[in-house]
Image (cartoon, helix red, strand yellow):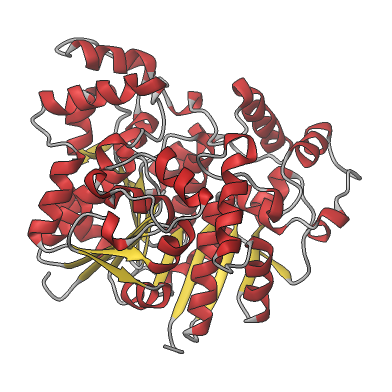
Length: 159
Length: 159
Length: 159
């Protein structure tokens, strides 16, 4: 399927939805499909590098935003049943029992397999995040480039 | 890309998801793609005209529903971090800092650019909304017509 | 449209989103499209048969999970406005007023019309559910088979 493409728009910052997205992205690459993930809005939180957080050159709101949102993918909540973290602990334990790697491992795996990581330009601007605060290997992409890529993909999802 | 189509099913009534949807719809039209937005379930709330709300000919539940849901797009909550409106205020302020227009401006822009707005027939019936309560320029579309349009689009998303 | 395919990935376990998914699946089959629903993560909860719940051969977490999640599709909450079940009661009453069948009827209808129901292998493993706990007629499918099916579909959505 090497002439086929997958494009995933990652809007949510839920641990479980992110997991689903990266499992699909990894699978698509294993099927040799060209795979692009476009991180917009809350999805940017998946790309944060906790070591590189900065408050410099940010407005007060941007600083608050930087400080009050999850500081990396490992700290994202579940979309439901989070129950102050208990549901997530349960899920992580169940995953461990099945030898299923966690979200950070899936993210690393996707990058190693050649999944393209793109941060939405407009979302970076609005939320006040800088590319330097993100994990390495992330490109910046605007909405029109996203639309062109997604429209040329055989599989495209909004997650 | 004028021979290509975009179809967005808008199910959610979250301010941030709606923003993402309209940014994509505007971008698709700027790329000259034929673009249809199909508003179903909570998505109908994006189309409400606060001046045209009516309780006539509605069952008690439909009246309660009309009164307790957000009365137009500007009043929609965020999908997360809403924090009694504080998160949304933060987002709106950050958008203003970047000169990014708000949701009502994106909706108007989409209509001016020729994005087709379709309200789901079944959702109107179930929720007890009338087409007269919606902003001008909205068509009614049934599920099968939606499926045909979406299946013929190169880019189709459920938002 | 008998040469066309629809593929729906059902991730959420919200009553309203599930309703939307099954309305689309039923419509696609009525248009003679080959239709596959792939139930992953919380989506598995839609397939549970309350009569067949078991705690045997499950870890403590899996047992807790089995007991604390909705035991079938009829008991799923709404994605918003659930208000301790009041919003859902309102929706169900409004649907009844319009002679719209509820979720269990739509599920049965989809099966009768030949919609293919597939449970995500990995999700079954992680959540500790067994195929025997599900309603009849469900197949197990892995992620790669899902990707292949979805990429060959004209309409594919993540719900």
